[in-house]
Each structure stands twice: as C-alpha cells, then as structure tokens.
Image: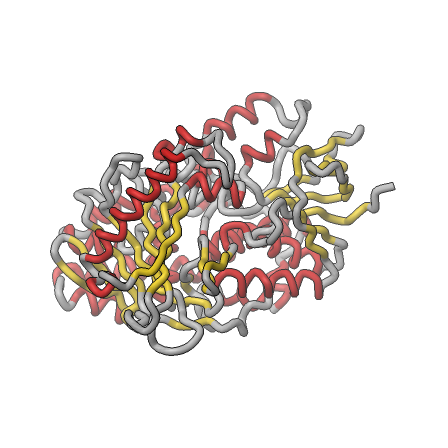
Length: 489
C-alpha cells in the first residue's frame, strides 16, 4: 500500500524546492521528486579538479533589503547566505566601439549614462519611473485570482519602446547590456525587459559557493518544515483517478506516489507527455502547448585558470558586437557576436580561479545529435563543441588579454547538455517565449485542466530566480487560497 501525501511536487530544481517549502510551511505533507542524483535543476553545480562550477546560476539582482527579490529571499530562508554585492559599477559593457559601465542605484544608473549622453537623460528618467512603478506592484501578480493580462507593459514591445524613446544606438545597446539574462526578440514584452534591468540595477549579487549553496539551503529548509526530497525519481506518468483528478505519479523505477495535490515544475510539454489521453486534457489543449515556441539555449565555456594570474573582477562583462542585438542568429555556423563573462567568487584571495563565458545558442545548432545520450555523444558533436569553445575563448581574449597563456583547462555545455541534465525542453534558457502581441497564448496560468494539478517555473510568466520564485508563490497561493507571502510578514 503506497503511503499517501498531501502534495507531490515534480522537479527538484529551484522552483520545485520553493513550492515544497511553501506548502510544507502550511502544514502539508510534501514530497518533492527529482529525476537526477542531485537536486538543483539549472542551479546545479559540478566539480572539476577541486573547483566548483555553476551551470545556470551566475549572478542575481535585487537580493538586499528594500530590493525587489528580498521578500522572497526572506520567505524561503535564503537571506543569510554568503551573498557578495558586486561593485557600484556592476556591469562593464563593450558595444559599438564604446566601453561604458552601468551603475547601481536608479539615480546613479541615470546619471552614469547621461554623463556621456545628456540628450537621453529625460528618456532614462522615464524608464526608471516605469521600473519604480513595477516595484510597487510586482507582487500583485502572485495574488490568488490576479489577472496578469491587466499589466499594460506586458502588451508593449520592448524593442519598439526603446527605438521610440532613445535616439542613440549606443544607449539602446547599453540598456540591452543584460542581453544574456533574457532573450531579446522583436516580440519581448517591455515588462519582461524592464524586470531584468530593474533588479540588477537595485543591486547585483554573486553567491560564494554558487548555486549549490543555495540549493543545499533550500533542501535543509524543506526538511526542517517537514517535507522530503527524493532523488533518482524520474516521473514517467501521471495517474488519473475515477473522479477525473490526478491520483498519483509513477516513476521509471516502478515506484508510485499518491497525493491530493500535485505541482509540476517541469516543462509543460513533458507534463503533457506524462499525462494519458483523457477528456480533461483534450487534443486542442495539447496541440496548443506543443506548438508554443521556446527561447534559445546557452553555450557555456567554463575556464579553469592558472593560480594567482588573473585578478578577480567583482563585476560582469557584457560584449555586444552584433549589428542588431534583437535579431542575432546563434545557430551552428553563426559566429559569436555577443557574450556575457562572469567571474566566480574565489574561496579566498584576490585572484580568479574560474570564469564563465556565455553565448546564446539555438536548438538547431545541436539538434542533429538530439538522439545521442550523455556520455555517448558522437565525435562530430565533440568537435563542434571544441571549435565553438576555441572561438569563444579567442573572442574573450580580446577583452581580457590576460587569459592568454593562463587557461589550464575548460569545460563546455550546450542546449543538449541542459536538456539531458535538467529536462529543459530543447535546452531553453528562459522557457517558453513570451510575446507582447499574444499574451493569452504564451503566458501560462498556474492552474491546469485538472483541478488538483498546478504548475510553476520559468515557463509560466517570468524566468530567472525572481520569476521562478514568483510562480512558486502563484501556484501555492492558488492552492491555499491566500497570500502566503504577505501573511508571513
């Protein structure tokens, strides 16, 4: 006889663990099921030669008191982790032959850009005003029964807004300096674009110990609240009861888990695959979800550095060399044009031990090898990765000359890697693509056709640590019928 839980959460990444904590804090008996040997999803870390490397967690905005992410950080018990605030000039940007810095704090942000582009100051102040308005209303969207489509900024093109309000192409590119923290397309909603600038401008942070430190704390807090995490539990089917509700899940190892409530934090396409044909989830709904476009993925080169050679840089570097940052091809044979360079916080001392190079990569760049499995990739795939890595390193050396002769090793990952380790559909870095002109079709609700099945994660509304944590609260508020975040304060 299978022991019945109050709630089962599918996926042990950041979204699944935060959902589990929220429900466990409400007294529910929660089990989080994770397919991998270790939890974390895109926040997993790995070790090579005694050093820790992050997969998807690099730096985050808005952690400090009074900043946009702080209420969620506090609620989930992450406030006292070893966050490291980046420099006041938190982002170094190279674009169109210019080098500029983005400054922390709204007024400094405006003044820093306006010092070189005074004619843009009024437009910059207007942009900051929009960000401040977002801050005042951001948590309205997690309230039960809130209608996200009431947010007018979701229905505005970010690209069109910048072109209409800023005459300088350099300034427009500076505002796109975070282009590797969100996918820039003609269809990107202004709200999504502003959220990225907004949180990082308030305060940008790295975390000593990286994503592993954060995930370990979430697991501890889940267990302290009475929940449990089970790893190596790959869900392969949702089981439907005679009453038309989800009654349980079956895992690939044959184990079954029953509950009253379910939250899935995996990609909606996978949830559909695991759901048998039924009247609740009709063909038209399945086809609608399956046709949704996904954002691009990421190619990452993680550099191991010769000890005591390259000083640690407490800011990130963004390079934009493409003619159009909003429409930059990133297929198999497309040259590297844009890059984000991130230094990982060293355990001690003032020298960097490893650096991440991140560039966008579309699924079609690796799709010819999609049938291959981890550890059994063909030689052509390995050669492609090596060639692309060498191109990335050569690109980065133009901006960090000290890399020459001081790289002792490197590791790479592609959208295919992310798909196999995290279950992310086509290795998408930001989930389902949201479009300002089709919100109803691309922004998903935490509810599903099953009254006791809910969903959370980056595919719903926003991606990143802020967006995923907000969807966790949306799902759990819908289940509990109250505002758990404000109740906690």
